[in-house]
Amino acid sequence: MSNQTVYVPSREEKARQDFVLGLKLLANGDAQRRVREEYRDRLLPQLSARLGRAPGKRQEVEGELARTAAFRHWAVLTHRSQSMMWDAIEATTRRVAPEGAARMARLHATAARRGSLELDPALQVPTPISNTEIHRQPGGYVGSPDPTDVSAGLRYIGASMIYAVGKGQAQAAGDGRANILLSQLQERFPDLAAPVRILDLGCGIGVHAQAIAREFPAAEYHGVDVAAGLLRFGHLIAEERGVPIHFHQRDAAHTGFEDGSFDLVISNILFHETNAARLPQILRECRRVLRPGGAMLHVDVANQVARLPFDDQVMNDWQVRWNGEPFWTAFAERDMQREIVAAGFEPERSFAEHVARPAGAWYVFGGTA
Image (cartoon, rainbow, N blue to C red; front, side):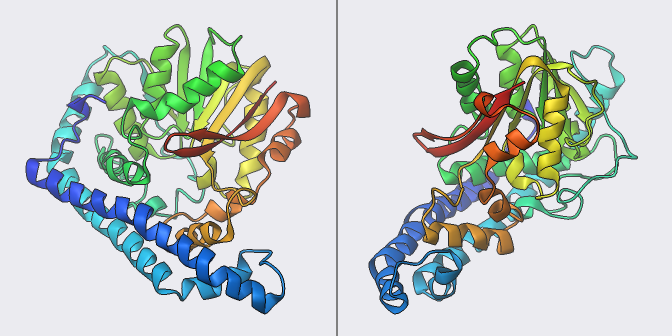
């Protein structure tokens, strides 16, 4: 992504953020590997001998695994590096926020816009966004009511450069975030060469949206999110890069768009940040707004219990309780193809699969109306 995004750390800030990135890489690399080795080489044989069988569920493992030195070291490093990340990001955010506000004010003052921004101050922002600091982001995603405040988006883009990259996703801070979506669209829906209208649910700051909008330049692109603080920043950077996206502050479960009005509905890492009650509602909304023959594609984290050993499940569940990931475990336990069929898609025209990538796997699910 171009550095005209406003969020540009100074040399000293970048050095501090790079140090935190190093801690993230250590936590997600060697420290996590040692937890797995401790479980596989010592704890699993002990538990199997005591139970008279191999453990059959996460709960039979987590107590003893959490008491090991390897797990405690990993947990402390993971939690502390998250705190240090936000401290380092905040230094840049506070310094550049006035410039971001000034650029937003200039954007408000011009009629020469390619896209648009529709905010709804009366929107009842649902949980978890309204009451949870996802990823422990200070102040959460919603931001202040100030129409020029882009601080929430500045923090989010700053975190992308550390949090996601620290998980081995080097492309996540820029346009490369759309790579998996674009490759899966081409592979699974080859006939969808020229969608007329695209709906992007939980679009956030719209980094991936920009790449997809450029891939389909003739399409009318609509991004929906409940967080005004992210949408303002997304609108600003899209306009400064000349990418026409229409951002709407709306609920993904109740978008307000007409029935059958989109050729393509997508999302990127939305569902693992959605509570259990709203997940099926969002899928039903996807089905409602798709035209006959339209396509739905969602990409999310590959933390499903069906594919992860118990040690990884325990580490993921720890993130739920302590590190700002309140719905990871609930999402990991859902059969998304079953949910998609329950939302009105035909079984033979729906899918939920894990797709291996160089930096790990993604969970890809969707269907055709």
